[in-house]
Picture 1 (cartoon, rainbow, N blue to C red):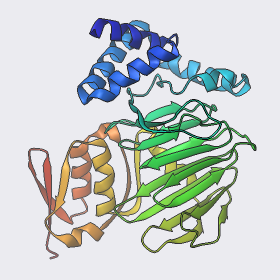
Picture 2 (tube, helix red, strand yellow):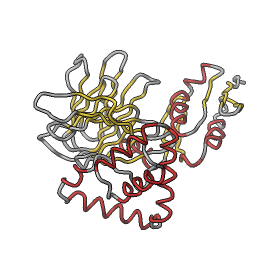
Picture 3 (cartoon, one colour):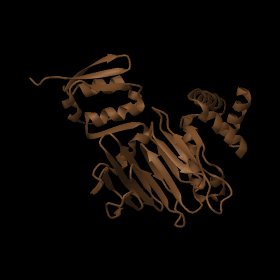
Picture 4 (cartoon, rainbow, N blue to C red):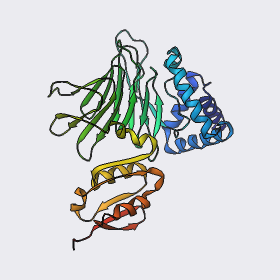
Length: 328
């Protein structure tokens, strides 16, 4: 059984899998975390046998991006999802909702894609749009995506490069906020810790409104950010001089600009298998500015943060406890 599924996985990585085989493979992935782990092992084996060196991959990626912008989109529409050569295998769960619509013979399915903890993942949508999912984030879309509308559900954080199609609006919905797009580049971050959704526009134009329509729609220009307070239902538009910094996470960089320790801890949990606890609640509001790389590791980051002389810490297994240092 596993050998036949492994053969399907290889055909998937090579792009030669039939639609019915793809469905079988996705069903195997969705069945258990162990199956997803086995899929990652198969992908690593395949990469070792077939993948060229990293510098060649980068050159090929740049070339492919140029080619894809000029190609007919038919090929993109035939592929529901593909793994990025640089991304970990995604956990894909399909067909957990099935509905029938008038004048539609086939059932509409809902696909959901999750980026595993510690791994950013790149996705190509059926219309050719590109999405980068931050670690622990989930994106969902329906199987009729791109026919008359392009509706996306998001939990967590994602950066979008959207293909222009004025006949099919591209709408991202997250925690009560709807962001409507034509063709553009933007980042959305759903921050449950601080009860806010932040949208940063890098290029093009988007409009945002709320699910309850409490506020009038707001149009963003490049280098602007919109912060939506999910508790109050209020939107606030400001200039964002560091718009490009909002997507530093794509390159594995952690950028903090006067971020509270509570915000920093929430971000670290995306990438490292640890739980960080505040033994003194006042530490949550202390602030820090700086940059790290994910590959630096959690204990290097904690050692640098400790240089603020605001706290000490102890480690018990996967739990890190922060203790406030009394002022002298």
